[in-house]
Image (cartoon, rainbow, N blue to C red; front, side):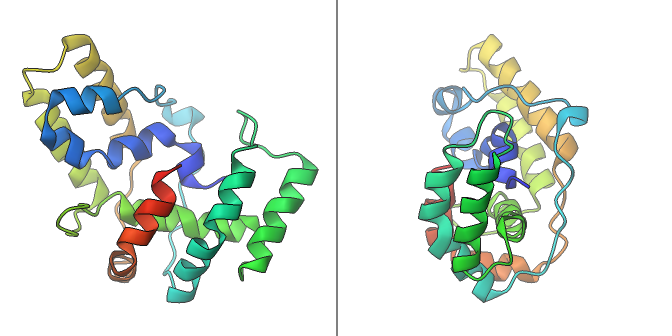
Length: 189
């Protein structure tokens, strides 16, 4: 299982662009150069939402640098070979997870919550609602080139179709507590 941030980079990029969309078309045009979003049929299965623990969040932060080094080696298919899978499992186990799949599930849940937190105000909005707000802001933008705007809108509308609400609101409190560290660690992805 590959984490949400690796499976759906265009979706998470779109979800995390609230400050850029609000800043104006030029910044968004630069940031919207992500690859096109796959159709819902091509998307990975929906994440299994769970209640996060502080220990899990701290373990994600501790494992992130080593995981990044390994996940950078993932082929475009996202499926690691046996050797790479063993390395991923090893790093996960060294940081308190049963295996890489458990680590990936926690990162998916953290990423989902992060996508709804405004980096400036640290306020939370359910990710689909935030996406709808971003789409409305982008539609109203008259400075962005039409072609770039349409491509960005297509990506964001596709992302909206597969973006769930956060089910466990206690995760919002926990992720907000570690927001700056998590945002910095996972933003690189």
